[in-house]
Image (tube, rainbow, N blue to C red; front, top):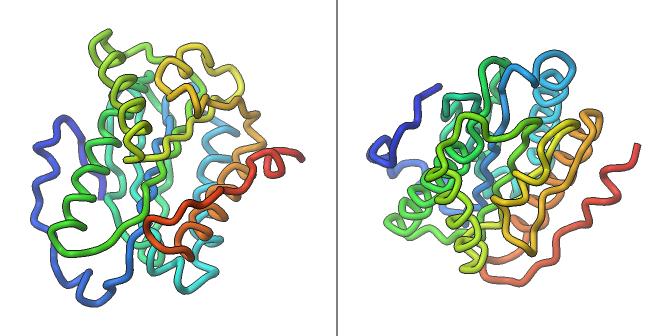
Length: 234
């Protein structure tokens, strides 16, 4: 189900307790923040759709991971759309992303952090343990439709969340992405990485393996994620 995301007030829906009664496992939340602007048309958007499908299949290969890992998807252009709110990966039906419009990176980052905070509050209210969330942002552009205030807020929020270990926020710039602008958003210890379009499959394979490693550990454990380098050669 797709919904417009304009403010944190959109996140006040009451959560059905049944999902946690039926599955009380600790949760590993992962949010995909995906550029669907017009410049992603053609092979790039197809590669992105294929990579998300592969991610779902890979994560579902392990029964425990499929019960613990949760996925949400924000598709952004000049508009911010929550195309999938948090569900366990075994219930996740990857959306078919369509490229159109401009690019609003800061708005997407702010929306993703709001969505994560709301989900963590739901866990706390329902007594569900959770792992440090992972956010993965993909873009091939620059924040042409973001205000200066939104850019500043997103940059500060990511850096603060990283410092507090409230999220591990990864960003990847595809092909002609403005890496300087993207770097401004990210924490210094986790700079964005450039990708070629053909490497999208590899980075989602890395994400699937990382989510599996986290899900098979225990909340609060220090865990070293797999190196991205081995997944980016082809």
